[in-house]
Every structure is written in structure tokens, then in C-alpha cells.
Image (tube, rainbow, N blue to C red; front, side):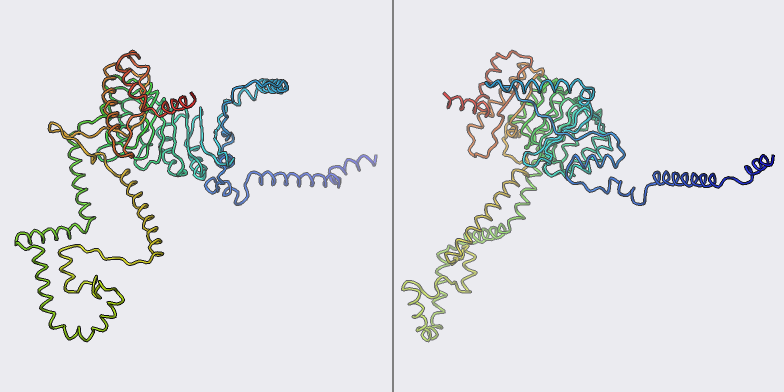
Length: 558
């Protein structure tokens, strides 16, 4: 009995020391877990700063830079940078039978990998395909993005990782869902890239505003631009034509423009032709697979032969001629001297004074001064004799050195060129330096002339009170495949081709433009065997450099 109250009284009053220790240990473990959880939630000091994408220094390797910037920007699933797959070469069967089991094993492994679920869907995952340089396996040469929408955040990441790519030459975007906002961000990105970037391809990206002309601004460095399959209509062609050239500005960098697979009609073709009137940089133009008919074809053909200047163009031409005249006068300071000499000559002719009488007067003045200086000459005769011995019998000591009194007289009558006495070694060195400097200056002048000469300052032809400018002979390639042109439009191109062939035969300078070398008018609304089309082909066949090379190779082979 005594044991029961002691047991019952001991349990509530005096807890076991073991249980107290264990509960204390549990509470300590709970505190540590809470502290560890809080530590995992709250980042340490400075971690946010290290994860800031703005502070990341790109290494120039697109794969690592893009992945790091996407992770810092909060992307958990982002496109991977992969090497662009090359088209496989056609299989050539070999004589050895040992290759067959190896090929069978490759086909079996390929079929097994294709049957897996992952390999089926990995093809549809967004990727950034790159083409690398052969010499440097990490240097990206071209970028291909196809079939996934590019957001503004991705363009912000590109603005960080694309400029360090020093070998980047081309960017190709196919069906990436561009909008007016993302297109503007993409255009702002281009000047930040390497100066080697020359080719931009935006295909399958219809934009309602059709503001692709922003890619062809005056400060643009794009050389090759492809805008296929963008639903460009006559309004978009109007903007592109104005970007090619206007009365006061012209694009000087774009060499090729691809506008195939769009909705350009006669009106749009007229706008493109207006842009070609004063553009002297575009060499390659494709308007294939559009809706151009005879009216638009005639407008394009009109630019390839002498065309009449409008009133505004004539006024601008006169203004440019006045500006050019004033610049030439300000650049040549000797013009005023030549003008003064001409006026002096006119005055002397009006007074009846000839050069012979002027010489006679000078001789008389010298004879009048001669008696005064006889004594001085006698005193210095010995010195003169010594000088004559050194110089030679036929030369006087004062020969070639005009007197102070005669110098202004000689300057008025004739322009004297001082003789330069240079040793042989120095002459060779200075001659080489002068040749180099002259070559450099001439190259700069040629570059400035080709870049800065306005087409309105070209030699013109006046007929019936109208001013005709020579046609655009810079365009070499024109593709009008699969349009709606009939024989009426062919007549215009026949006239243009005949004119360019005649001009190319009579050209004197090898640097003169060649004119149209390749013209494609197939698959239009006319019979391919019609006489006009056959005549165009016969005229263009010897001008095509590719076909001429093939004929030469065939001739050498036979």
C-alpha cells in the first residue's frame, strides 16, 4: 500500500531526469531546423548582386553566356545552343563488303533512338542553331532561330551575349513571331554586334505595320537582307522604296534584297522602281512569287534605260551643280591667281604691249645700271673667274638665280617652277614615299567618288526640252519569276536589255558598271517560246557569267 501512493505521487511531482533531457534535446533540434530553414530561405549577403545579369561579364562563348544569362534572368527552361546540322551526303556504295555490317549497326541504333519518347520530341524543342568557324570551334559565324517566339527578355539577353561574338556574320530568324516592339528592339541590337555582321534574314514574320524599312536606315551596315514570306503588300513596298533612295538620301550599303513570296503588286513594283532611280548600291533584287503585272514590269524596265527626270529632280540637280561649283572654287586657291594673270594678260593685249617689248625694256634697264657696277665687278673679277672655272665655261655664276628686281616681273609673266637638286639616294626614297602617298590619295578619292557622287550629277541627255538621266546600270541581277507579266511587259524589258548591251559594247573605262547580267522572267503569263522572250534570252546568254564559265569549261573539256 505504501508503494501505490509513492508511485502516484512521484509521477506528477518529480518527472524523470531522462525524459527532461530528451525533451530538451528535441527542442534544440527543432530550433536548429528552423534556423537552417530560415537560412535557406534568406540568401546570404551579396548573392543577389552576383546573380544580377547586368553584372555578368560575357566570355565570348555563346553557349555558356546564353545559359548563364538565362539562369540569372529567372528562366528555368530555355533554348539550348546547338550546332546546326549539316545535310548528310548521299551514300556511295563501296566495293568492300566489310562496311555493310557497320552501316546496319548504325541504322539499328538510329531506329532504336528514334523509337524512344525523348528523341521524338527533342526535335520540336526550341534551340539556337549556330554555325561555327572551321579554324576556331568556339567562334560563332551564323545564328539560326526557327519556329519559336522571341520575347523582349530574350532580345535583352541577346544584347548582352551577341556583341562579344567577334566573328558573327549572319542572323537568320524564321517564324519567330516578331512584333513591332520586338522588331524595334532587334534593330537596336544590330549596331552593338560585331562589324562583321552583314547578313540579316527575317522570313515568315508578318507585321501589320510592315516597318521592315527600318532595317535599311542611313546608318545601317546590313549588306544582304532577306524579307521573304512576310506578307509585304504595296504599302510595305512603298516604305522599302523610300528606304532605297529618295530625292535627298540614298542607302549606300545594301547590296542584295530578297522580297520573294510576298503580296507586291503593280503599285508596289512602281515604288521599288522609284527607289532604284537614284540608288547606286543595290546589285541583286528578287521580286519572285509576287503579283506584279505589266504596269509594274514596265516601271521596272523603265529604270534600266534612260528615263526622264521629274521637275523636282531637275531642280535638285541644278542645286547640286551650284553647290559643287562653289565647293570647287573654295577648294582651289590658285583659281584667283589664274584669274589675276588672265586679267593682266588681257590688259597687256589691250594696251598693245607684247612680251618682246617688255624684254627689251628690261634689257635697257640692265644696260643703264651696268656703268655704275663696273668698278665693283673689276674688284671681284678674280672671284668670278674662280666660280666660272668651277661651274664650267658656258655658265655664269648668277645663272639660275633671278635678281630681286626681276623676280616679281617673272612671276607676273610666267609661272616658274624651281629646280630641285636631290641626291640619288634621297630621290629614290622620296620618290617611293611620294608614289605611296599618291596611291593612297587616289584610292581615297576613288572611294569618295564611288560613295559620294549623287546620281543626279551624272552626265545627262537633253531631248525636246527634257532632261534624261542614264538608267540604273549598277543592278546586276533581277528575278521576276512566277508573276503575272505578259508580252506587253516583255517589250519593255527587251528595250532595256538592248540599250544596256549597246552601252556595254561601247564603254571605254573598265571600271564602268556592267549593267544587267542575269534576268529571270520564267513562269509568267506568256509563252516561253514567244519571239520577245527568245530575243531577251539570246541577248542575256553571253552576259551571264555563270553560263559563260560553264561554256568555257565544256570547251576546254572537249
